[in-house]
Length: 119
Image 1 (cartoon, rainbow, N blue to C red):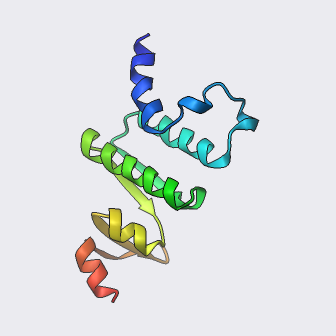
Image 2 (spheres, rainbow, N blue to C red):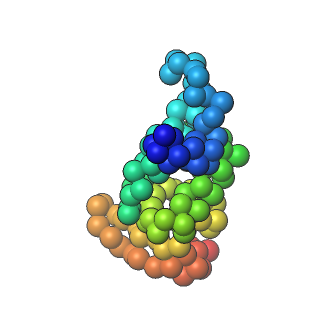
Image 3 (cartoon, rainbow, N blue to C red):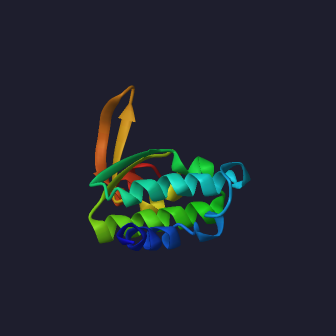
């Protein structure tokens, strides 16, 4: 019961209630991805790294996911390192930008400085 108390908010947050009774083969790919993010949220990490999470979602689901990650970041003091090439995601959600080139950090700046330098 204690576990269920922990899981219920995560299930609600990631809109997973309607798929709980389904078999894995019956779950659409975007919902499967939400399950993976929910699993990470349950672990209550201090930091999590995601590689192009936007690839698994349509625009509405992408906005929903990043909104959840933003809330988790604020409410649980969790840092998310997200690899993306999406300028719109950077403009909306990033706090700090780290630019990598050939595996080396070439720039580390706040979002506003980064966006001004890329105009």
